[in-house]
Structures are given as C-alpha cells and as structure tokens.
Length: 147
Length: 107
Image (tube, rainbow over all chains, first blue to last red; front, side, top):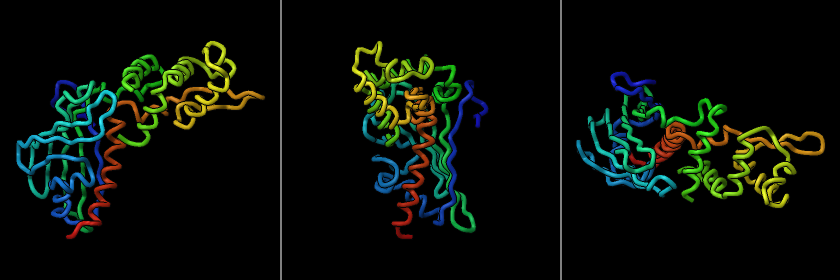
C-alpha cells in the first residue's frame, strides 16, 4: 500500500480483524487510558482532539521506550487517529500515523488499524537482503553496540 | 519489544558471537574447525557460540560427512530489521491482547 499525495512514497501496515463486540465497547478499549494500558502500553491518553500523550515501554538500544503521540482525529465510535512518533524517540526518526476504524458488522465490529507513513528506510533490511549484507551488518553493529 | 527481538539482541550483544555471525554472513558455509582457525577463540567456545546462534535462528548447520557446515540465516534477522516488520509483529500481538481484554470487559 502506498499513500498517494506525499512527496516521498510511504507505506502502511494494515491489521484487520472482526470481533464479536459492539463498536461502543471496542471504542472504550481504544480510548480509555487504563484499558489502553491493558492491551497496548502504559500511556497518558485522553480522548480530546489535539491531545498530546505518550506511550511508554521498556527502553531498548536506539530507542528510549517512549513514543510521543498526538490525537488528530476523534469520531466516536467510528474513527480514531493519532500521530505515532515525532521523530525524536529513536535513532531512526520514525514518524507514523495510526488510524483506527470501527465498522459494524452483523456479527460485531470490523476493527481496522492502519499505521501509515513508513519511509523506504523504515522497511530496509529484509527485502533484498541477499545482496545487502554489508548494509545490514552496519546497522546491526549500531543496534547491538548499544548493549 | 517482543521475545524474538529480545533473544536476537541478547544473542548479538556478545561481540564474539556477532563476529562469528558476520563472518558466516560474509561468505559461504564454514565448519567449526574453519571458524576456529582465525578467531583466537577455542573450538569448544566457538561450538557453544554457534549453538546459541542456532537457537536464535541466526545460523543453520548442515552435516556433510563427519563435519557440520554452518551458514548464516538472513531470515533470522527479520524481527530485528526494519520498523515495518517489527510493527507488523507488534500489532498482531496487540490485537490478540485487545480481544483478550474485550472478553473480560462488561458490555
């Protein structure tokens, strides 16, 4: 998947799953700080447009364990979007957008998560790896060297 | 982040193991004997490092006659490489956790 309209071609990850629960209930799980902590990560999320918040996890080499976020869209119980990463948290400067879409179905709700804005360098590594060992190992050195 | 990445970080955090892995990644399959020759490390130590690399999925061995030839497995690095691969794995696991939470929640 490629986002049109950006100068640089970026890519998305999409995960979709139908769940036997109402959109309202899933919305609560997606937008209540204590519930988000249960299934996603520790956070100080609040359901307000423009709200800046953080996800916090265990730090790793090259990453402080913090993800800076900002609510960009809030349309209960259908659509929620937040910026995921402002480019300062990791050596790689990752900046993405996470968009949740809840669509009622006869059996419950179709839950769709799209994380968009990955640059070509964010997927670097695995594809075409056979010819790319030097590049991979240089990256590995950097990552593993922090231990 | 996840167990697979954790294991890779721990495995490659050791400079001797990283050196072995890089050596295998740079060329063809090698035996323990060949790997020991220029490493400055004892053969049992090389064997031990290889078994750790093997458990992490970074190296595979193929028996040829009485010796085993080891080669690097590029796929073994997948969980570590690229944010996209890592996040794809991450979200699948989070979706599982979300479903688990929903089962425990009241309507």
